[in-house]
Length: 185
Length: 160
Image (cartoon, rainbow over all chains, first blue to last red; front, side, top):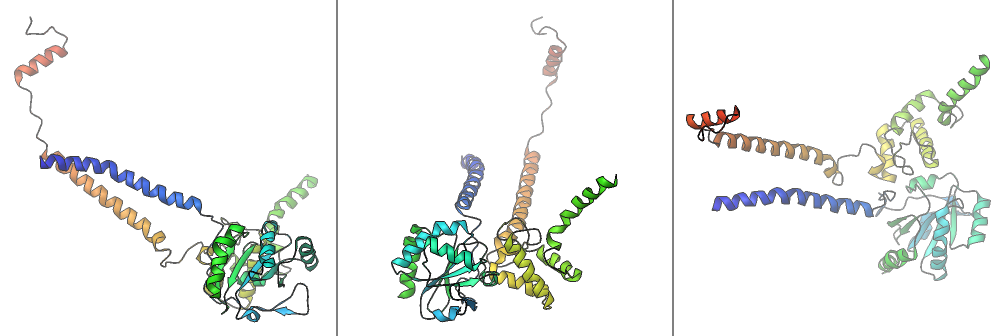
């Protein structure tokens, strides 16, 4: 009798184990489907923002370097006039700027000065200033591989968050506002 | 014939053009090293291409940066480290072994060991089962005759 029930248990296991493996596989694949392979985690998170000194977009004689922002929570937003997704994101940045949520510094990435300034005239300028990265060197130091990308940098000058792709109003509500609150606390 | 040859040769040479015209006076030594390094680096814009193969602007920039570092006399490891610092391990086609990639590296070995173990258990079980099974008894002579008669197509010998 005991042997028979043992045999039954084995038989059940024979069906349950492959089913369980299949189930686990499904869970992993389902998680994989929700992830965007274009969003590669940045190794720069929790590291000091790479230093640079670039001419400003509107005032070519003036320079900008991240050190000037020490003591402030700020956002470095990589943008360009040729960047289509930046147009999608731009109203959100304008809105954040209007509400005075955070200081946004632009990193104008591989763009001509005239094109960039014209683009800001057309779409509004949410930036306290934009640094002009004509050859994309600073972009490389920040691991930029597509605009728009946004870095949140804390009072100590440490990168705390990187957003790849356009920021949506939901991202502001769910990710950025709580993060700013935490960093400003 | 010559008229035909010229455009053909031109077409054939165009394929090689793309990257050699990227800089004015390419140094063959630098280009050779660039090629060997860039083939191990992933272009993050077009993720299934290497930096050597891609024509994306970022790949062009990174090739240029690599050329510069080669000219500065930096080692291959230093150049790879430079890329990883900025773009993460994902930039390497051969990811290093660390906490994050441990599963990636160990899983195939574990799967093979598990599979072989499972196979060994199954084979042993089957062998044991076969040994334990009683030998097939030979049919008794009377029954055997009956069967043979039936096979030969005769009427049931019992009836007859």
